[in-house]
Image 1 (cartoon, rainbow, N blue to C red):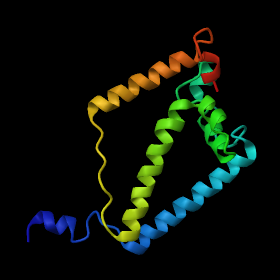
Image 2 (cartoon, rainbow, N blue to C red; image 1 turned 180 degrees about the horizontal axis):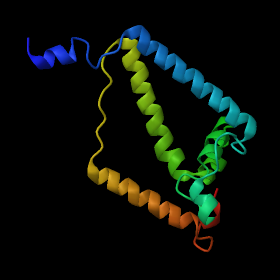
Image 3 (cartoon, rainbow, N blue to C red; image 1 turned 120 degrees about the vertical axis):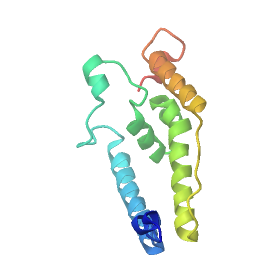
Length: 151
């Protein structure tokens, strides 16, 4: 045996199926509790979640301001309000989270490894530019849709 096999062991990086299912079930329960809380509060005053530090210091909306309200609006099936609260989060981030979680659930149920989703550096740069442009646009009330994009 090599030194590397002694260190890594036979099950390095793997997780038992019951444990994986417990993680999926626990995360689903936490997500459900969070969604119930957001539904009840409409995403406003969800203590102990603090307000956005960037907004508290500058008074400007960051790209993620309004995300909790957007999710709360979706729990009320109010898609136009959710899009108004935070357009990129509703159209890009939430679907990406749902797909990633769904792939993890599928991997836990089937016992297969979770597929690796690769995002190129170019895509990360484009996403960064998109979120920066959105942050600037939503803070300019005089541009078209600027007021509607502010949370």
